[in-house]
Image 1 (cartoon, rainbow, N blue to C red):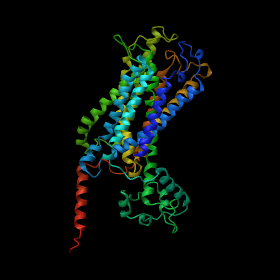
Image 2 (image 1 turned 45 degrees about the horizontal axis):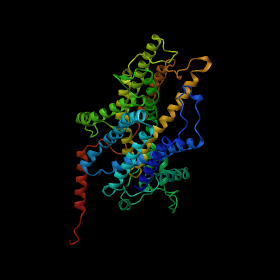
Image 3 (image 1 turned 120 degrees about the horizontal axis):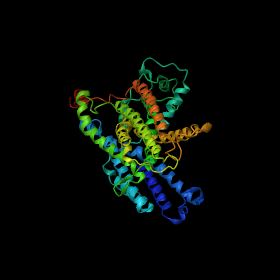
Length: 496
């Protein structure tokens, strides 16, 4: 809990720095009204240091807060209480709903304030809002369910890997009872659970083979530690399959927005700010999450007998398929936009194309729909499948995909732009979008998504769930009742 607050305060400090960087005259670069930005005055070393320092501080604070805060929220539900477990199945739907509801506010109200009132107020408001959020979070501390810290997750995994490699030539016993493991009571005292050995990634089982009397944690690990490490490593191929969809998400605030600036953005006398275009994705996502949780799940689980409606990997797969459709539609739309630009002679000038911005609406809506399936399932999958003591690392996997996706997006953009301009060819991606060929670039993304979908099908085909996530609530209740009966039958009255 303390570390979450520390990271949150770090996040708030970054917001404070960023607000100062856009507010104080001494921290802002000189104003420039020349269209040729090369003639503008450059920012000083101090101004750059404060600005980039604020961004890096924000990155550290956000990275340390988001995975942990969602884990704390999910941990408030008792998996052994049927009603609470049922509510937990909807938690990540509404968690993502609240996150993107805030995003909608940022893409509309805050963007309007920044464009029409000023950057100072535009950043001061979310800075104040973040401080209020931290105070609200702290006020609920006495009412939260707190888990006992289990030590460093990375250290536990490193011990297993090191111990296994140290005993690379040690044969693995056929009988799993020969592996080193603590008694159930030892785990009960710590409030954790013992995990039985599984036949996956057998090489790591060497870490729990007893070869001497030493209990050095870097030479001998318990079966539970080995299984925890196995589970985190088993999710890596699924993690890799989400990199490409995360790359597609990066296009919303980059190329999709730039496309919108070339079109007519007027609704009557009101002109839509370019940065607000992402609000269409957010509105679509919010609508789809509500429909999915309140309509789709209730209908489909009657046939699948799955409390979630469909399995998490199935939900992710639907999202990946929708990403293929998004880029296909985007390519067709861009091809039409370029055709209109040529017909009206605005290719070389880069002037506005006489088309409404709403021709981009299908790709924005489809992107929101895809995210409603993929992004929610992604964070829920990594949380659900992570071991009890590694839930935060599991949700961190979800955040990692977004970061990697942005890096891949930047790499592909620069690489494709450079390669397509070689040998005197006109490149696909130029500053003037009317001269570019974003339709080819989007078609390339559609192909990339298709290949990624094949990869996803392959890795998900061989993935074994940590637990049977499709168990019905009735089965869970029956198992709990059986445990109560067993305990009752084994109870011996001291007076007898």
